[in-house]
Image (tube, rainbow, N blue to C red; front, side, top):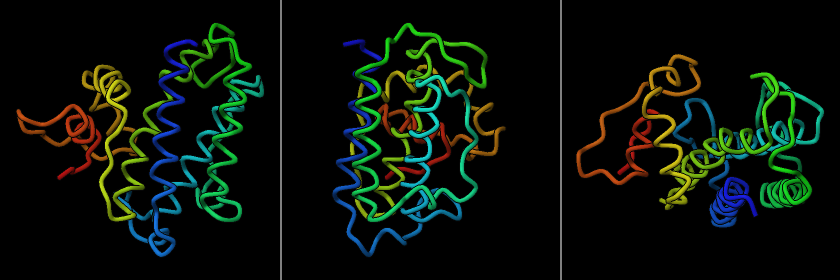
Amino acid sequence: MNHVFARYQRVLAGVSDVVDRVPTHRWSSASPCPGWTGLHVLGHIIDGQQQIAALLSGQGPREPLRDPAEAVVGHPVTAWTATRRSMLDLMNTTDPNSRVASHHGEVTAEWVLATAVIEPLVHAWDLAQAAGFDTSLDGEAVEACLTAIAPIAEQFAATGMYAPALTASAQATPQHQLLALLGRKAA
């Protein structure tokens, strides 16, 4: 299997690990994402996977939902499990070198997953925080995202989708460095 696809599958498994641990009463808890609860974060992850699926299946770019919680149909765990299964099925039938239309023009399916992995990766941490526990993110995915984002962290903050970068201590783990670059305070 292609290493980018394998990384993406591991990150989706990491989301599942978090989703399965969220106590029912914590879905309405505040997340590190301003104005979003745990349910909003999960909805954003699900909606993001549906957007990626649209790209990989040749439907082209799709705009995100205004209210991400609308993407969670039924019980949160069931909704996520169905989304993950659908993504895994799609990745198993997608050629990493196939060309697809995106907001960035025509790109490979591999490029889509290499750039999109940051969303489920970091939002798994956000969801864990809303649920009241910490989680370790996939180390290889963290390193890949850290390498890609470090030079352009200011551009991420400029989009308004991420808080300004914070300074991480010299002893910070790669996970904490990545979270700090995206404006998140990790213990």
